[in-house]
Length: 113
Image (cartoon, rainbow, N blue to C red; front, top):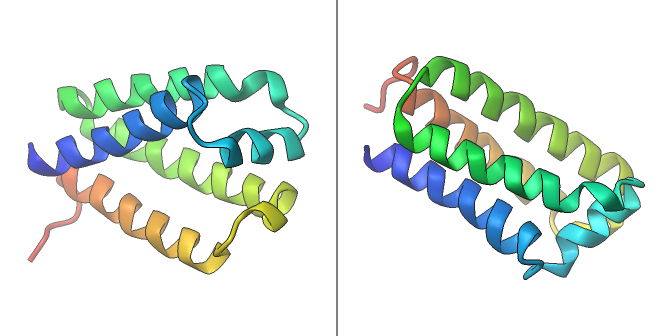
């Protein structure tokens, strides 16, 4: 539950705080650079829904696959379309790789040892 709670908190922060409430201008700039201005709030709401799903513990492998896919797609999109807006691209990729590992640990596929 602790790992699921941490993962859910990140999704809720990124979705609700940064995108829906617009507290991180960089998120809007990156989405704008991708030509998807209209998508910021829907993306934020989707991320917030993922937080609820992760926290619920329902179908953990499916949500781990979704998280992996979304993180990979968002990282690729950000690096391709908004790289100049990302202050530390290698750091972003490393942090997100660790996040994905935790998603799979929470799913019970990988084991923390």
